[in-house]
Image 1 (cartoon, rainbow, N blue to C red):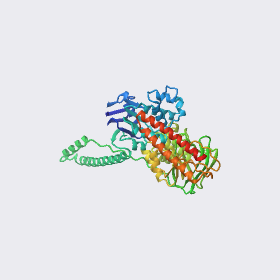
Image 2: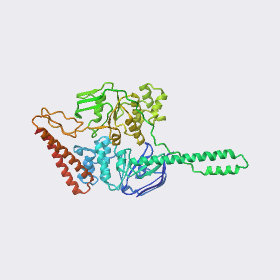
Image 3: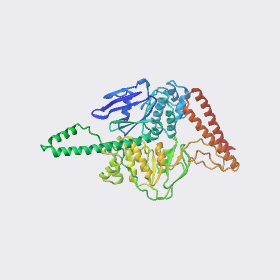
Image 4: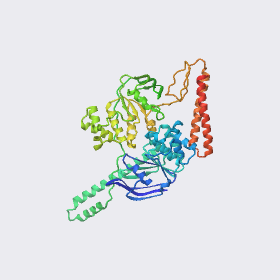
Amino acid sequence: MIQLDKVTKFYGERLIFSDVSFKIVDGEKVGIVGKNGAGKSTLIKIMMGAEEFDAGNISGLRAEDIGYAEQIPQFKKSTLLAEMLSIGVEEFQAKKILFGLGFSEFELAKNPNEFSGGETAKIALAKALLAEPRILILDEPTNHLDIYAIDFLEDFLKNYRYTVIAVTHDRHFLQNCVDKIIDIENGKATVYAANYEKFIQLKAERREYELKAYEKQQEEIAKLEEFVRRNKVRASTARRARSRQIALDKMERLEKPPSNDFVKVKLGDAAESANRVLILDDINFKNIIKNFSAEIFKGEKIGLIGRNGIGKSTLLKIIVGDLRADSGTVKIGNRVKIGYLSQGHEELNENATAIEELVDGFNLTLERARAELARLDLFAQVVEKPIADMSGGEKTRVALAKLILTGANFLILDEPTNHLDLPAREAIEAALREFDGTILIVTHDRYLLDAVTSRVIEFEDKPEIPKPEKISKPKPAKTSQPPKSKSPEKSTQQLEKLEAQIKMAEMELKMIEREINAAVEPAKLSELAAAHELKLQEIDELYLAFVEE
């Protein structure tokens, strides 16, 4: 069991948190939440022994029991697979984790030090998972993962037999993977035996109770102070006045509970537009996007999902005109005004301040610009420093402020909740739900997808199949189904039979993958691995038969 008792931490004279106390029982799955800058990462560094604390006690944490995905890892082996095997695991187990997190067979032979920053973080996560420590500590584990890798990670952690402690803003992860949440707020830690949705309910109830207690005490204090003021100068009542003053002096004053609410974000009413907002016809771009077609209609809220690197952000840039497709057409409907929020915030001038971005870009007064930024929780010195010096979350807020001011009726958003804390995510989600215009959103935030989108397009990258003449172009928006053929050589009955076989085989493949995620015995894993390989071969043969028969 892990126990923290009244742990306090200062940075210089600045108090980070005080009297933090909680227990974690062996095998529990715990989420640590709080606003950006609340001290969550500092707390886990203290728990790992990487940082000192100023007061209190910690027990039940031994360095040899802790596993952690390093922020800036150092790799010693010449290949990714060798780096995994260096910690003493079997090759199949290493491949299971690597493939589950989105690495390909080709990348297994690549030098781990040659991967990008995001991929490096995934490698560090893979090593931490493979090590199977008694206490697994994760800092934003779903960052850099696509929606499929996140699903894999959740399945893995649900079946993990030891303790997991995760700092995260991922609401879907908190809902499905934890049974206890530690909320760091205003320098205090409150423990809730709950997943995310229950935590939100309990926190609201707790705040309501604390607010009532605070207001009641304030009324009592006001009455006592008024009695003292009126009676301290009268000889007949001075003694009672002194008694009331002593009671006031000894009273333990309750603090007013902080508001749980993020400043409300409102996107404004969307102007009228054509019914067909966007038509994409047979879009091709380099080796990234192939034959992509889709239509979006007025008022739709569409989620675009797919694996990392498959071309989702590229497609958005083609739509807004930042890139030009090699072939195909992009048609924007009449009276459609696009507002675009990019993942890398390219729409922001890194040398300008947030105030300058709004004043110069929209001809606002300083007061109006400050008010718009304050709506997104940006105040004081933050809005006056160069955007290049801002955190990822601060940049996202500035980009959102600009987006709101455009008055767009078609929002194209690339990971809009990246780097945002829970209150900010809830506020953005509410704004998008209430928006009466059209939205196309790329996100790995599954909670946001579920709450906002009315339709999801899965952007897949299936191997190209030679297409005989008269076979219609495949529509990647529906790639869960095989391409439909109009070839007269194939009967409708044959096509339907093959299509049904492919669907069944793909369903069986997913079932095998879920069993692999849950399996722990080496013999069972080997058996499932062989079944997985055979099923992949079967699917390939069915697809070829579909176009060759």
